[in-house]
Length: 201
Image (cartoon, one colour):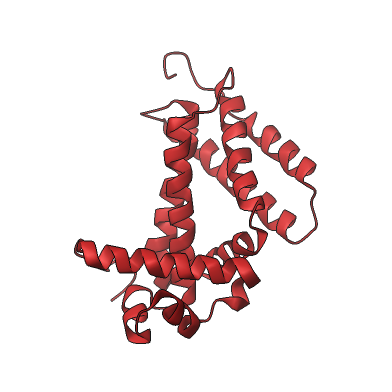
């Protein structure tokens, strides 16, 4: 069965969700200590207090696990941004502020950030649903900052370019090839593409 044809998983029970969250915490802690290479599935299972086979039922690989951790981090960010939305005067400023807040959150734990970004980079077709979930969540965060509920195809294209630029800037910063100041300039420059038509804000 292809990744596109994978059936939707049934909802988790309360106990299963608690176990899943324990696994996510254990994976994030290991990644925070040593990055991508530090995340070994047996160590994750031990830290989470689950059997190795149980871990693999939830996450077939460490790439699946790290992409899920990134989704979890973005969900927390999304909740925070809805409680404390960006305060820019226009959509471009709000999106730039939003992405820099996301960047600063990742900056606080660079080993974890590097592990998550590497997992997204290494992800193959088997991880497509999880990667797509991260992409949809990132898009939702940007659209919230733009204050758009029904974006046009042109606006969605701009959002994709912004997301690609943010991801690329994150990679170059993690590799030491770009300063934080340059990341900010790049994000502000690409956000200048936002020009919502009258009546959509």
